[in-house]
Length: 193
Image 1 (cartoon, rainbow, N blue to C red):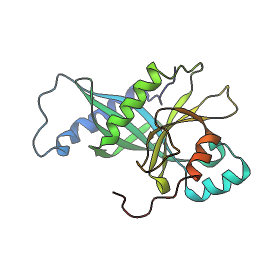
Image 2: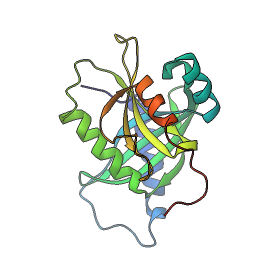
Image 3: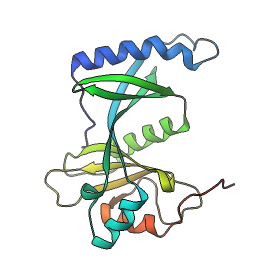
Image 4: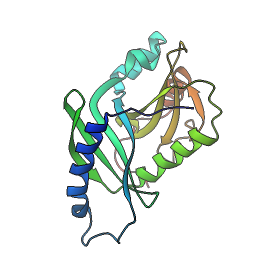
């Protein structure tokens, strides 16, 4: 079973207050009356830049040597148990996240599906920390599974452009397989239909 980033109870309370204050601003009118709006999973956001990707592939590096922390957190927010929106925060002080944005996006549901897949279908034998990995040059979002007992991290792709043929969604890849598959695709430039 995998696990997400854990915030302290105080940090969760502070962040929940910030989110509830801004939740109504996401809608032209107030959302329907909900039984509950919950701050759910939280993921550290890491980025893999195109330059580091190319250099790391030549050296045979793992994502541990290539990805960089953005110092931001991604939060899933659910209404009555269903994905509603996401929030992003930054930790200006250790353990004290400050809300930086909220978003209504199809990515929220894709992340929720990936969480469900990890929890029920992935058959993980260890308990890796799950990070959200973004690869801007390829418009790819993935879960990055970092386990202390493994010498190589793993990746589960959440979202990728439809034209990419080498990046299967919801399949566990080693980080080296993921890097190799990314490099078989062209970086995204312009708009695809």
